[in-house]
Length: 430
Ligand code: NIG
Ligand code: FE
Image 1 (spheres, rainbow, N blue to C red):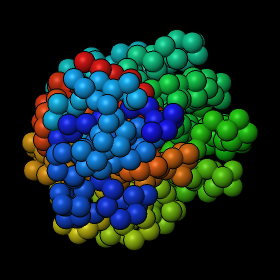
Image 2: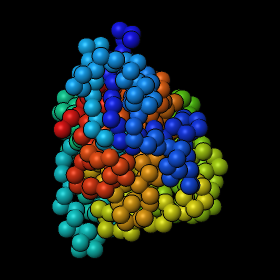
Image 3: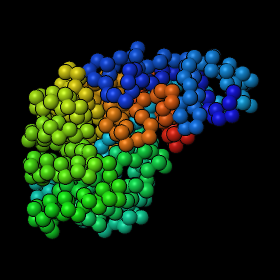
Image 4: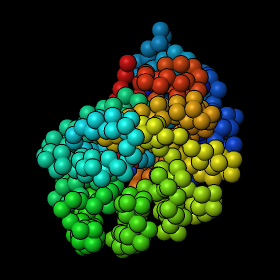
């Protein structure tokens, strides 16, 4: 037994390693539900050392090797955790959030119930620009504490890697403030990966052409110089940024070394997904109204389609057919929360509950869509490949409150998780 060995988990139920084939690549179609390849049946043990998974193997073998003196669940040689037959899944990966903003827009539900659309509410002074007013007033310190509070929620639901967009500043100083607050949150209980979304809306005080100039000549160079974002995002939708503006922004960002992940086709099919595929974006998100040709094109270019069913859910809309279409055609896709002032959930188990209870997706498929697949759009920017459980990878995982991995998304509104590990340390335990 080496001195660096630090924790041995035993009596594990189903272990969803999701580590079939090249774990840095996403899965699609029936591969996503292949239990034989993705889950180890109960009876394994897992060794954690220096924040990484050091070994996975049959329980008796690992206990004999690392805790030969074990008596009454204790060993003098190593720390031991009896998982009591519970299932283990990877740390969840939320690849689309608007993590930092201030203010309240809960009044918008009554406006929607009166028949106003998202666009109407925005035109009447609600929507993104309303949140911009309150977020501009918040100090960086205030945003950091909002971030800590939000990340606590996210941890409670098992997320260990999270993407976080700016986009409620819409000015040089406010966008930088949000991104600097975001940077301060990385590495505590999550990997926090920042995206610059200065092109979330046009601020009230500027003409669109003036704001485009500001984005390209002021915000982008500063964000890049300060290394505050890994990606650019643009809200590409009629009424917000059009295809031409989106293309201009993404190409300018490329010159500064920023890749792209885009908001497209949320309300109508405006060709956003097709453009994202042409531009080689890492991901194209919402994609509720994208057509089949664009979905096929995105899959061929390796652009991940990220579905955000929490958003149509809170807007009172249909959850759409896109996910089933992707599954049937073996097109890669992911799920994410889209946490924002309208869609206030940081629970991927809840999002996956929508996918399983409302769309009919298999729970293991939904798990792959909330771990390994979204991770494949973020891993380039991480030291270690996340989204699966395998030897040499980071010890980011969740112990469930049940023996079956299917349980992970069957408790909407309640967390299915008893313990969350991030880099080998427990960040949440009930
Ligand atoms: O992804 N649609 C654009 N952005 C967010 C919502 C922003 C807001 O309404 O504050 C989204 O759903
Ligand atoms: Fe969004």
